[in-house]
Amino acid sequence: MSEETFDVIVIGGGPVGENAADRAVRGGLSAALVEQELFGGECSYWACVPSKALLRPGNALAAARRLPGVPVGDALDPKAVFERRDAFTGKGDDSGQVEWARGAGIETVRGRGRITGEREITVDGGRVLRARHAVVVCTGSVPKTPPIPGLDEVPVWGSREATSSSTVPGRLAIVGGGVVGVEMAQTYARLGARVDLILTGPRPLPRYPDFAGDAVAEGLRADGVRLHAGSGLERASEVDGAARLELRGGEVVTADKVLVATGRRPATDDIGLEVVGLAPGKPLTVDDSGLVSEVDGEWLYAAGDVTGRALLTHQGKYAARVVGDVIAARAGGTPVDTRPWGKHSSTADHVAVPQVVFTDPEVASVGLTEPEQGAPHRVVDIDIAVAGSSLHADGYRGKARMIVDTDREVLVGVTFVGQDIAELLHSATIAVVGEVHLGRLWHAVPSFPTISEVWLRLLEEYGL
Image (cartoon, rainbow, N blue to C red; front, side, top):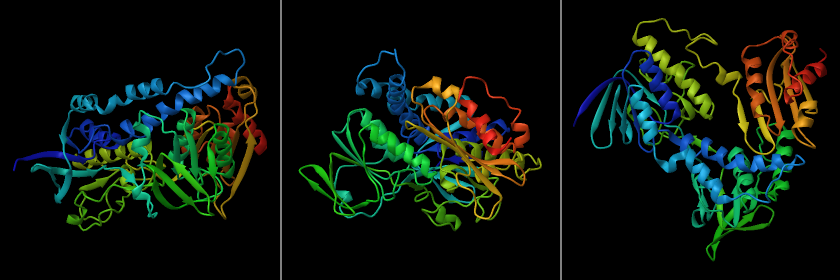
């Protein structure tokens, strides 16, 4: 068997792994990046990028219809939508990602990497890689499939099949009302499918405020999606090549495809965790520097979905940058600053995680979405009804929420719902991360006429 030595070995060549390796190299270290599928990972080929590429044409068409005098067609062209999606994903060609990595000074290694000893990774085919300083696990997450009788007998899609399909099923049933469920429901309804969205609770997006789930539910219904609230899937069976789905309460749904969108779990099943005394299939517990807490020595790190902290690409990349910098600092004998908000601490994972749901209406939030019980929190809810929104679309409807720590008079959470509000989110993220006092935030004057005027209305409602 061949053996090679690097300063850092990263398992998982998605955006998170790429960032960890890149930061280590920028810090003066050598790095190998091991990937068993496509360099660029889930986000580039099956998640964030293709899903937004599929959603954007429908959102643009709906936005145009809300303005008089704009000539628009009656429906989307699915073929053109899929072709544009393919232009972003490269139809699974990761040569560009490989070229980027090599240009950044990162050694790319194809194959499944497994931990086979301390600072040792063995890749399929017998290639042994040894790390002088650290191994970083960035293997991401995989879909969770609920134990529903008969589900394995019907034509099932996971999120990958939904975002990579080039055909529109006549009848699509979606199990799960989280982000993937609602985004794909709207995508395929606007592409011409009859869509049934099966929910266990009263509304979609249960982790968001009720007003957000209600607004998205209204948007889905306007696109013809049939919502089965409080139903849940009890049993599935195959009938004449289609899926027969029996819901709680006795209702039956028939579909040509069933998209199971019931969450994800860390992808740690087959990476050799047992070698270092950890349980396969479980998340890797890390401190804010990314160091795996339950392994002796400062050599095993993890970042991204695999830690179970914040299952979002941008948050994983943030943690990976911290990990790469930490490893480089420790290798060079430089002091490591793991204090909250320090260079070597992924503090934002705890208090300022931004996320956008790219439906129509969009939902965007950072920090708390509900006040914490017993905390000095005040909630301010208003409609987004400003000159900027009125000019943006006829009949504009949206809502905004801010949660204020009244002891410190700083924001601890912001949620927006409405057409085209995603780009408002970073201003909220800066306010939360920066702990900007409301008295100072009052002097951040929003431009007229923009939807950002909602900031002024929120502060006025608070009493400033």
